[in-house]
Image (cartoon, rainbow, N blue to C red; front, side, top):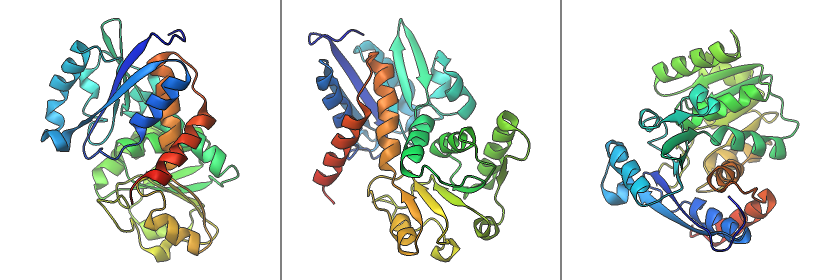
Length: 290
């Protein structure tokens, strides 16, 4: 898509409980900086009193109204996949989609979450030891962060989830892609944390509507790093606790920004300014109500 002030793009975000999302503002402001008029709509299942079962109708409506694409978040990242015409290799491998582009009558699914997480990790924890990593969460976001960890070179990834079947399934899928012995379902979280170099947190715990700690604080060790995906609030209880005992940390803000950087490129064909988007995100965070 050429840089032209007369061009317009209509985008949206489908998910549940997403009224406070900063993604719309990030896309609209970056679009304006690139000479593009963008309207980014929030399609909140909770506010509309809908479930993920409404996805077929919502996709059809977005196509009819001329949307250029959609971002997809909880609880729809996996449920949307059968409704798409094609998937990029990463989305297919991860088993989750967070970006849908409408192009030439086709619905094309992408996953920019894994790239966003990896970019944030490299910037915030550039020398983070990846030999033994524990991850909490095996859902759509967890599938992306696990993929990112192994792409970045994690030696062994131990995955814990309240649903043991999901943890086992994710570990098996990762081993099939990256090699036997690279990922395990963590039956003993305490034992896994005792030898861990770092922790990836990929569950909703710590969000404003799901406060609290995703694991006992005593499992953390000062030499470990902790990487979070929750960004409302930016400083979750997990990060605050980890910082107090000396852990190096990375907030969920980096993943939020960099997944949007890649999605913007897919939606518009324009190369966004990642540093500008990062600064804008920080401004939005500062201005957001507590």
